[in-house]
Amino acid sequence: MKISIMVFTWNEIDGMRAIMPRIKKEWYDELIIVDGGSTDGTIEYARANGYYIFVQKEKGAGAAFIEAMEKVSGDVVITFSPDGNSDPDRIPELIGKIKEGYDIVISSRYLEGAKSYDDDLITAFGNKMFTGLVNLLFRSRITDILVMYRAFRRDIVKELGIETKTVSWGTQLLLRAIKKKMRIAEIPGDEPPRIGGERKMHPVRNGIQELKMIYSEFVGR
Image (cartoon, rainbow, N blue to C red; front, side, top):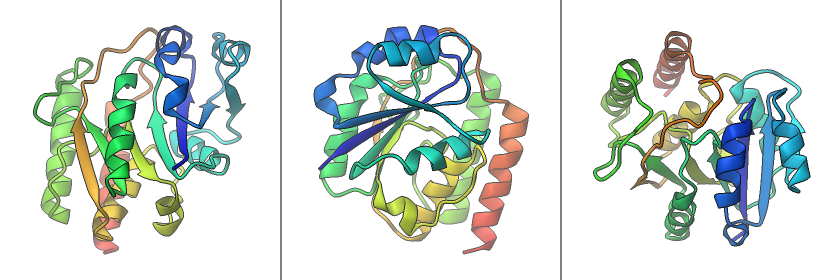
């Protein structure tokens, strides 16, 4: 089973320096960094340390995912953020669960035993609201719908027809997997605080996009 780690960057030099050395080479076969056009030294740091990095052609988180998926070759893909929010120590656990036969494994911030140290009142409310809405509409029992840190079989992206270039690519992937009754598991995973840089998530704008995606997938069942 070949493991690919997909790392998303956009001006994350502080996080890169702190987090990337913690990702052990024996955990993966391939590591690809997709960058949104960093100007703070992130690209230079990655190249100087031997990482494969490319700058996405189109703007947006969804475009970064789609373009990176065209380059990864692993049987399993782990989506990872080096801003400090993704704990590298969870990587072996994610892989272990996939090897048990699951299609998607989520590192949940809200499963018993885990906690988000990066949430504020707005994001904590939004995460719980959207997760509750999805569980109600799609009859699922997931504790963390919006977290980006997860592992999944690469072939399901094509199988599920993931095509959105919006920030809601992860929600589309998960909702379509739920509708297809794919095997989804969660492991508890703390979300540490961000290390440097600026938060890229805009609560109102992202929230509207998530609602649109949930509605679209629900009515298109």
